[in-house]
Length: 294
Image 1 (cartoon, rainbow, N blue to C red):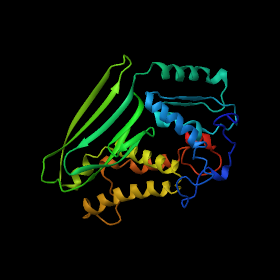
Image 2: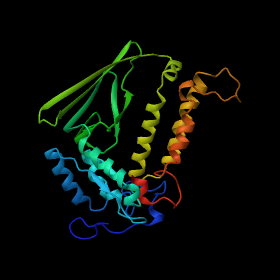
Image 3: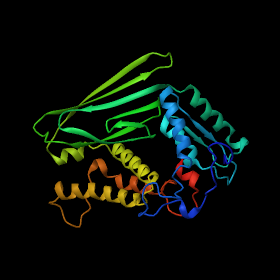
Image 4: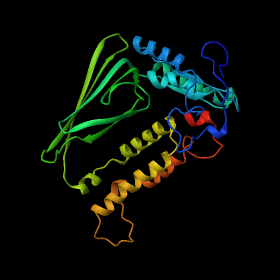
C-alpha cells in the first residue's frame, strides 16, 4: 500500500464496508469502492487526457496484502489503461502470467487521444453509455479517452424519443477520431442499418443474449462502484421483467402454470445467476475488497 508521500493511501480493509447496503448513496463516506485522494488522482487524469496518455496499473501483492485497488485502478479506468492484478503473487507460479500480461500491455494494438460519438436515426436517442472504463463523457453519445485497445468495449443504451414503427429501417453511425502509433490523426466510421418491427415476438426472436448479458453486467458494475447496494435486486428484476413481458404478450394462450421462455433468452436466468456469484458481486466476507474491484 503506497502510504507515504504525495497521494498517500490509508489502510481501510474493513470487511463490513466491502458491500454497501442498498440504502447507501453514491460516494458515501467510508465506502471501500470510493477512491481515496480524489483531487490527486483527478489532477493526473486531467493531464493524461490533455496529452493523450493512458496509465496502466500492474499490481502483484503478497498473499493477504491490501493495496486499495479501488484507488489504484482509478487512473487506468479513466484514461483507457489496463489493470493487471495478481493477488498472492508467487514468482514461481505467477511469473509467466506477469510476463504475458506486461508484454500484452506493450504490444497490443491500440490508438490514442480518442473521441467517439454515436449518432442515431431520428426518433432514437442515446440515454446512457457503459464501458470497460470511465471515460470523460462529453454528452450521453460522446466520450473522450486517452486510449482504446482491442480489448475495449462500450455499450450504448438507446431509447425511443418518438414513434418509429412506420419506417422500415433505423440507422446508427459511430465515428471515432484517434491518433495511431505513427502519429497520424485519423477517423474511422461504421454505419449500421437495422430493420424495424412492430411485433414484440420478432423483438424476442432476434434478441442477442450476449449483448443483453453484457449490458446487465456493466450496469451492475456501475451500480456497485457508485455505492449502491441493490444491484442484485436490479439484476433479478430486469431478468424477470423481460421474461414476464414475453409470457404476457407472446405466449398468453398457454397454460398459466407452464414455464414459457423465449428461445433467444432461455439461458438468461442462468447468466444472471452466474453474475450474482461472481467475486465482485457475491455477498459474504470471504472476498476481499481488492478482489471485488478487479
